[in-house]
Length: 63
Image (cartoon, rainbow, N blue to C red; front, top):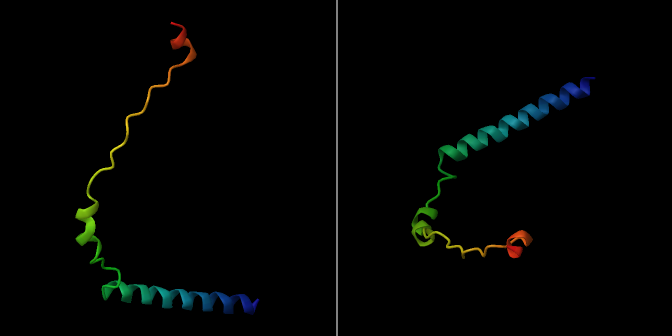
């Protein structure tokens, strides 16, 4: 039973270390995106779709 308490405490410590590293990375600007805004204007056009052909049902062909 004491092994479970040891594993839980170690997992909480590891989770806290990763959380602190994440907060540090966010505060230092690690996740700031400087590249995408400069190339966004190159990909701003909408994709044009070809018109779809109307599929006739058997009932429409008989009329």
